[in-house]
Amino acid sequence: MSSQIIAQLIVSGLLMGLVYALIAAGLSLIFGLMDVVNFAHGEFLMASMYVTFSFYTLLGLDPILLLPLVVACMFLFGVAVYWVLIEPVMNVKANKGMAQIFVTFGLGVFLLGTAQIIFTPDYRSINDTILSGRTFSLFGVFVPLPQLAAGVVCLIAFAALFILIHHTDFGHALEATREDAGAVALVGVNPRKMYALGWGIGAAAVGVAGVMMTTFYYIHPGVGSTFVLIAFITVALGGFGSLTGALVGGIIIGLVEAGSAFVVEPALKQLGVFAIYMLVVLVRPRGLFGYF
Image (cartoon, rainbow, N blue to C red; front, side):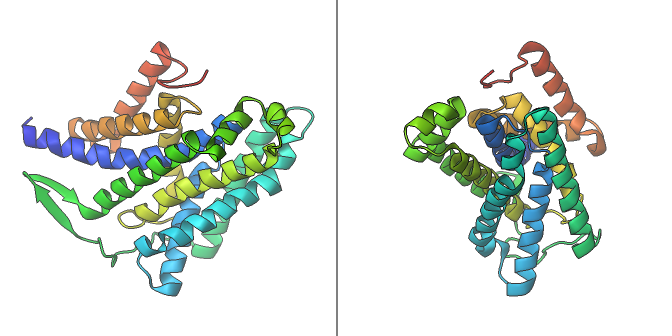
């Protein structure tokens, strides 16, 4: 294996890993805030891609220009999901954990069915963006511009999310709500509002990834199931509730996946991902940076 091939695998794995990391960040944020696993997270990604496609069709604007609009829509969607579905479930007296699972899983099924009815199961794509079909070579390493833009934008969004959570008063309020919702209520912080905003931010994060993926990936109702398993593995690898873990886990998954695709058949590339995950589960069950 030449150094050029190794560099190509690293670049490809790193760029895709950053996308995985941002997808997983929303999942990790919601779990860390409320101990709720959102089983509809893959369908959130699918919804953001279809929202992008719809605005692209109606307005004729490039997905990059549609990024703020789609992120705003996903933020509002996340807030609405909390108020309409999650908040009532949090007040269930018995079997709260099972109720949360059924509600989020049912939401995923509903979103999947709605997408199939409105858009049909056909595969769609956006092929005439400002990034489409453009590739440049750097020291013999080929870098597709859509994947490069996706990786850079996801890294910027991840950095902004990290600063928001760890270096602002709002982020400190979220952290305090995660630690003790009853205590923060005594000092004037509304835990329900924090939970709603947390769901909104989580949905907005996956919205950024969804917009960027439309520049190089097919859009179809089942696209969420393709990435949600990787998102769960990324979160479990990095540690549930840890943004740093989501970033490191995403990069590791991307690199391992790229390397596995070179060693074995591309259809079996996730074998390496599962092997790494099993190793971490055996050695460090709480993940690399988990709270628990």
